[in-house]
Image 1 (cartoon, helix red, strand yellow):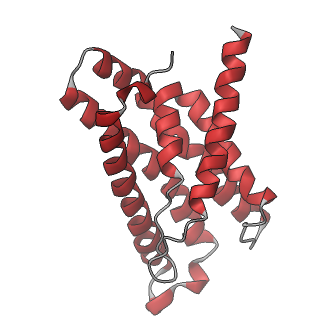
Image 2 (image 1 turned 90 degrees about the vertical axis):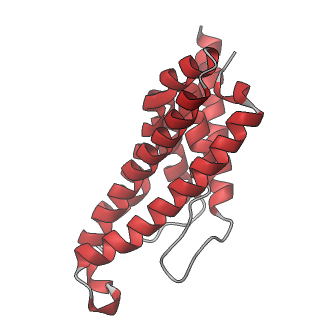
Length: 186
């Protein structure tokens, strides 16, 4: 039992590192829009191992930003919201892990697809909600085009979150068709 738990946590740390590496691939669209490729392995892991493990791996991914010096610092509270809380919440895709495993084992392809889409959007929405909050509170004074901080943050983080969810969801749908066993740990 202890070996299994250790394996899960090691796997989560590796997934966090992979998410960080994928985050380094430039996917910026303009100055503020981005697609977060790190959500792909994190979502797979959260679906594979569940909520608690997904939250852990998200935390590790967020903390890796500190180790690699890729933190944009305005205030301590801003850093905590954007690099700790937001990344932890990305693991909420794990809420759908059991549902996905059940659908895979009973060969319900429609249920598999809908579960992956829901999990992806929940994980992305949960993460980007916190980026939205940080955008309003901490980045609002930098809002472009004379926009209200609420609208500016909603547009910037909403488009980034939606684009990330679409790319992640599409790739996971392809992966589950080719390699469904990746979502079911042995």
